[in-house]
Length: 206
Image (cartoon, helix red, strand yellow):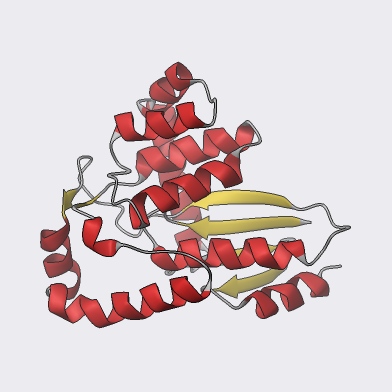
């Protein structure tokens, strides 16, 4: 069964959705799933070096105080999904292009889900700048991926363009929020749905 997941690596709801999908898939012991990460960028015009977190919250939401209730709710939902968020550690809101390139390469090497989880955890729990190439290469090495190849891919105009085109693909489909799940090209689910809802959506495609 094919499942495309449109997601961004700085999207907390995407991390929650990733965790819930993993639990839903465990329900189907006899089914082989082909999961595909489709890059989506919440901030496609983000500078390559990212911006200071406080400045980002001011620009995006009008200030940290205004954004806080939303992040409190997200952190609570993350905890219910078995995830630990430590958003106070985040200093930089990054450009996510390089992280998407790393994840796409990891999927081609059959290590995509593990690397995706590590990227999410690095950002939401450790506060690591996942727009920084050296930090991403460190993740690649942790999973025995070819660090030199990852470095070249992250600076490749072709790979950068692929991320932009993936983002555009999602927007052309009318996707304006992530996560967004596409199951067997016929069932579509928006948002970090419950494990039970994902299980039911998968059952429809059996």
